[in-house]
Length: 589
Image (cartoon, rainbow, N blue to C red; front, side):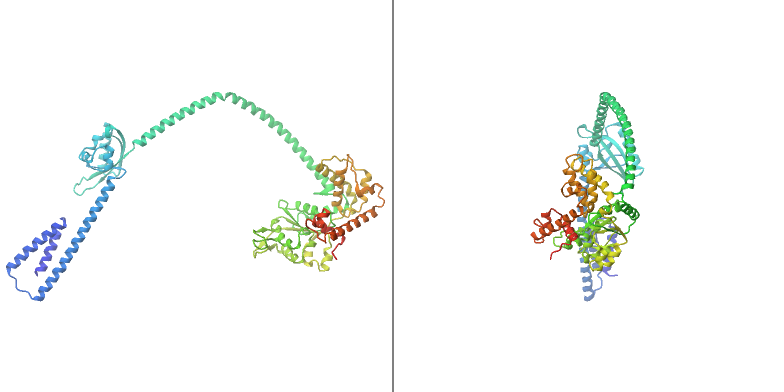
């Protein structure tokens, strides 16, 4: 075996036997043995080596020297890290918010952190090697501490107890102690690590809270007794009030019962009257009206489309409301669209609505009237005035129940009942190409023709009574009677404006009547002459109205709407003026 190999074996042997010694001591021992070996080998005078072997041996020694230096540097770095870790641990241990004590098995203090020294008010050097039992304030607490140590030594896990300690200047400390047994390599019995929490402030606060609670309970009991004494008169008054209230409730119950009986009788009488004279807001007892009531009763519960035909003023809107009120849709709205009141370019947007930006000035989405009527009824008054380009869209609504808002590609589904009305002959209109034939047949499922007032003159007295009562309440009059001469004159009149014209005449007569009897003035003065020249007077009035409308239109250059339009000068709504123009066949040449 070569000297270098023997040197390495010896070095490894020394490192193994001195593993528990420091790295510096091991290096010194290794050097000493190496020097002894070199000296002995020199004395033995070994055979000379070749130059190549010597150089190789030198290289190996240099390599191992470098390795030793690197190992030495690593040991120094580990030692520094260990010192830093120990320093950090000491800081955490000393400045922890909890007091830490290390006891031996007999309860003698071996170590304590800075928080523990502050708890007991003594320096660390004065606490170490002192029995902890000397800081316990009472004998009972010392017994508790000894039993606590015994339990911890028996390794029963984390143990706790409460003690009273004597601190700085004899201050009493309420301490909560928790301990655990930790094994030691040198000491088989190990040591006891304990944490102590100062609960003095918490216990003081608890005691103060308990005292405050007791005082509060006392105050509350005193106030309750005082309130009980002062509330005796109030209790008597409340008892009397309850008796009076019970008496009033009994009287109220009797009045309510009587009221319910009167309301039931009133409803019954109204139903009886309705059966004989009216259907909803429609008043009359003629044969023509009785047939109309029958048709409405049959039709109202159904969801079928209805077409109402009749002259202007016969009450098509009233009939539509009555049909809606008698249907299953009565809890949903009935939306009315007057096709004559809207310009042709606005009817589409009013019916179908629009999306934001679809029209000039459309800053937000607008829901159309068809969508508002979803689940209910839509009443299209004077549908003959609907432009041809919209009739196909309305046909789609009736057939498929769907449409699109202006500016939107999304199809909207609706469930709506359509009631249409017209004072024109729609069948004649589609024959002349002014109304879609397919739309006419869709609307004409259940046609109802409302008779004009001149065909049911026996209903005029009932209507006059109804309108007198209505306008008495409106204007605060007390008109009660109508002369037979006035009724006779009203029944002989032709009534081109039908019920609407009769309502206007009665309203004016109620306003101008000075006493309790209805006085009919103006053009109806001729009726007092037992009805002579009635037909001639009606014709003259119609012609006068016709000529007057043409005169005003010519004066305004046929301008209907606006501040200086014909409708404003005549005191009429523009839609009413247009209806009168259609009625008299007035067109601009």
